[in-house]
Image (tube, rainbow, N blue to C red):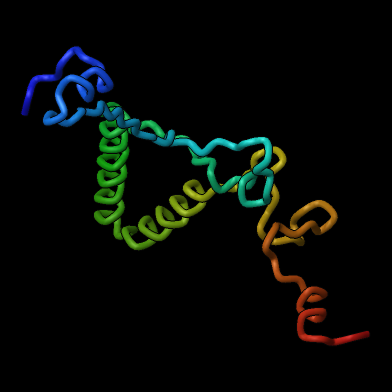
Length: 144
């Protein structure tokens, strides 16, 4: 490799025919952004759908939360041991299971949230993507 000369390629061509002219090539890399952007012309349904939105990640619970759960478990285990001594263990276990199921399932809806079961929604409104009887009848060609 020869060191680059300060002469322009035209001067070198005229002065020294044996030495080839060197070209400086600049490369430009295109790095797309991690988030898709919408241009003004790209307004298709797939471009404006909610598929690109990702829910926020939940924060990891602290060690204090784990210690609290451990204390709850130890309290439950102590009560279970007492219930076994009183020959009440199976009943305590069944009541504990029902208690856990009831309090660990979500029973209240967020404001504006609709249910997957249309009978529970206002005006029996169905969620998107639900196959309704009317739509099914139209698709298979049943006419009334």
